Image (tube, rainbow, N blue to C red; front, top):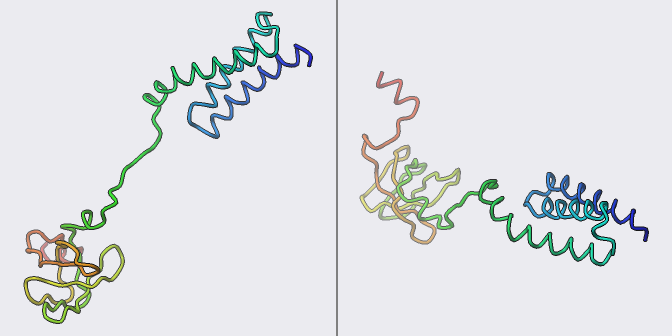
Amino acid sequence: MDGEILTWIFLIGGILLMVLEAVLPGGVAFLLGLSGIGVGILRYFGFLEDPFTATLVWLLSSTALTIAIRPLINKYFKGESYTKLADEDYEAMDKIVEVTEPINDLTNDGRIRFQGISWQARSLEGEIPAGTQVRIKYRDNTTWIVEPVDELDAPQTGNQLKESN
């Protein structure tokens, strides 16, 4: 292979890798491209004549840049990340929901609407009529255990706000 062609391969390949970073962010492609451009420039000025040496310098400089600079890139250019608890019961505790079917503590046949789904519910404090706001305490298998919400704790709906004004 002609030495000039290999020089252009390093230069163009480096630029392509740096452009590829815009499509596949992560910092690695950019650093590989930066190393490729560096080796291409060294070949252009005649410092790396041998293709094997040029490839070895590119591999070593890419590795060194990745190890040295990537932690800094990740520190200052963080991607979007979020965490979510995997424990649904913990997330549901103390949520205020509405009773859709009357809850009877004896027959265990009441229902609530939580996260857009109708769930079986049971009360430890007696009967609760439909339309009442309740607070989720915990879950027993697939049945939510709820308690009535005090009027002061209950979030006001649009109708309640109109009535109070």
